[in-house]
Length: 241
Ligand code: 6PG
Image 1 (cartoon, rainbow, N blue to C red):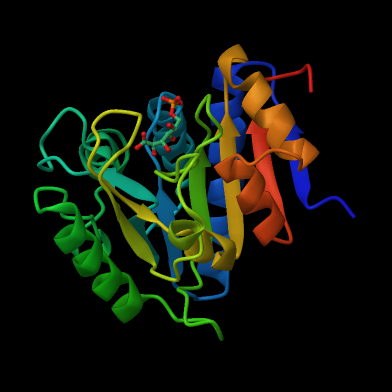
Image 2: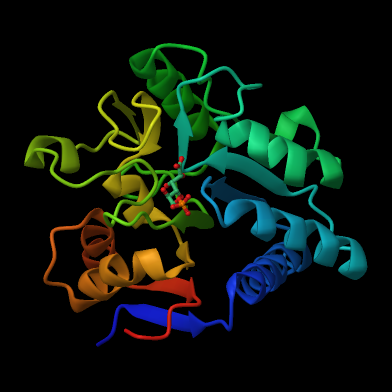
C-alpha cells in the first residue's frame, strides 16, 4: 500500500499553482463545515511562488481566511524582520496581502534562544490546536519543502535516535547544516500527527533525495516522515523518479 501520492507538475510555477489551488480547496471545505483550520508553513525557494499563487487565487475565488490559524513547520532563530526569517517571508508574501490579523498568526519567536523559542512555540500551539490521543497537535496541514539532503522542516540527517524519537512538538536545533545554524522545528511526532502533510519538491537538485526517500531505503528525514504517516502528498516537477 503506497503511503504517498505524487502530484506531477510541469515546472515550479505549475507546482506552486497546483499546491495553492489544493490548499484553497481545503480552506473552503473548512469554511463550509464552519470549522477552524490549522496550518503550518515552511520556507525555502518554492515558498515565494506558492505564497504568491495562493494570494492571487484566493482573491480570484474570494476565499475567506478568517478560520485559518497560521503556525510554522520551522523557523530560523533570527529576528522577525530578518531576511532569513520564514515568518517575514510569509508575512510579506502571504499574510499581509491577505490581511490576516495578528490574532491568527502564531510565529515562532526566533529572536529568542532556540530552547526558549521552542518552548514558547510549543506552549502556544498546544493552547490553540486540539491534541490527538498521542497529545500531539492535530494540525490540518503541514506544508514542507525538501532539502537536497532529504531534510524537511529543520529535521536534518545524522541526528541521534534520541532526537528523532523526541515527542516534543517543537525542537531546538543548534547545528543546522543549512544556515543559519540555530532553528526551531516541528518534531517528527508533530509532523506525523498532522491530518495532511504536503511536500513541495521543485528542482533537479532534489531528485536523489526524493527518489531515495520514496524508496523507503534511505535514512533521510523525509524517508522517516513517510514511514511515520499513512499518507503524504508530494507536489513535484521532478519527472525521473
Ligand atoms: C527552511 C525551510 C526548509 C526548506 C527546505 C527546502 O527553513 O529552510 O523550512 O525546510 O523548506 O530546506 O528549501 P529550498 O527549496 O530552498 O532548498
